[in-house]
Image: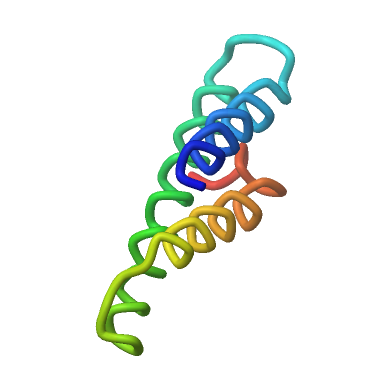
Length: 80
C-alpha cells in the first residue's frame, strides 16, 4: 500500500509540475506546492487519527496524502 502511495505521489508531482510543458518558475512552484500540500494533509490526517482513535494508521496516512494531492491540483501554480 505504501509503495503504491509513493508511486502515486511521484506521478502526481510529474502531472502537476509538467503542466506548463517547460521548465520554469511556474513548474517549480507547482512541484513545491504539490509536496507541501500532500505532506501537510498527511500529517494533519495522522494527527486527527491520533486524536480520535488514539493511534495513527497507514490507511489514514495514505488517505491524507491523496486528499492533499487532490485539493492542490486545480491551483498548484497559483498558490504563493
